[in-house]
Image (cartoon, rainbow, N blue to C red; front, side, top):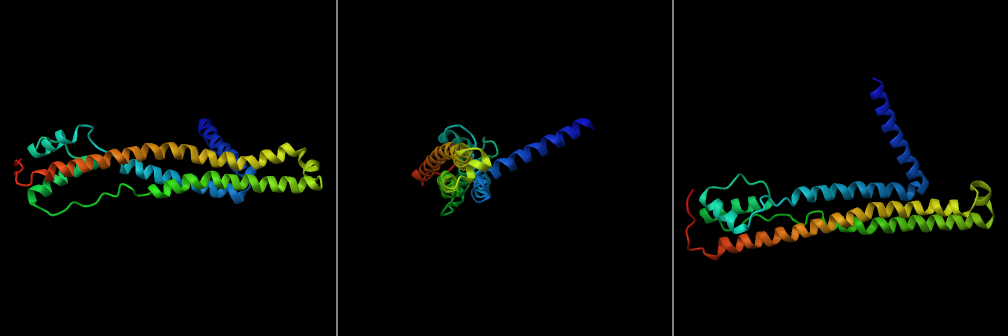
Length: 203
């Protein structure tokens, strides 16, 4: 029972610390940045799950296995594309369905670009307030100096960078994965369409 109470206290303390941190930068900037962070990581998570290649084997090896009926059940984009391509070739169906590999890619790029700019906007706003209050010495009398006001203004920049930097890294990884999958899909199409007169061996 005591451990459960300590766990609840720990969660409550972490939540209070996060709310205090958001309050330091001001609600007009920090809450939109938090919303951007949540939306960004939702889009990144979706793309991570979408861009699952499946088997790591060479495309030609996988196609041969599917044609010979020795392949495992498909569990990724490349595996599914090969299974469907072989089935369509056997059935002489005219086309393949399009894979939406670029879904949320533009949204992720936009959010990664907007987050540090929004943080910079919060910094500029905080600096303006700091110098306005410095003019009549209200900042010094209430908080104890210019440094405190500037530190408060910089919290928004820090939050913007915390949101953007991991997003940039994850975006680069996903873009490379997308490029590789696009190359694999193009190779699948070339292999399956290069010899239309050849009959695919039945399973």
